Length: 94
Image (cartoon, rainbow, N blue to C red; front, side, top):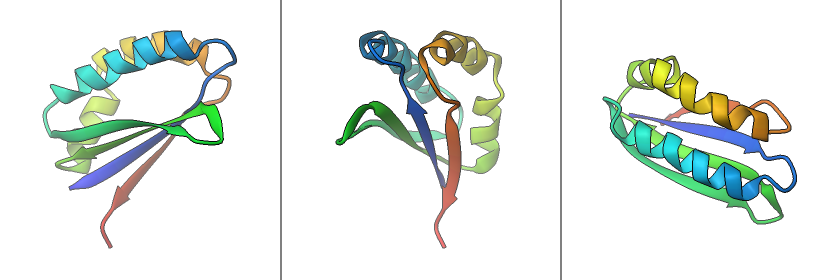
């Protein structure tokens, strides 16, 4: 199993719109093969700094979702709300 940390920074005043659309992305990921769990987190010192932490059965499952047309379409709605590129880190137990 792997975990994936996605870090995003939201442009000022777009937090509510981001919340709605990011929820759609996570809900869609839930039905992706290999998805185990996921949670959305907010930086306690910067409410525009957001993280999604998800668990996947394998890196291949994550890559399939990452490169899927469905995720690409959903991200097309989120990307304009971010003031920086998202940072994706794939983590595994040592």
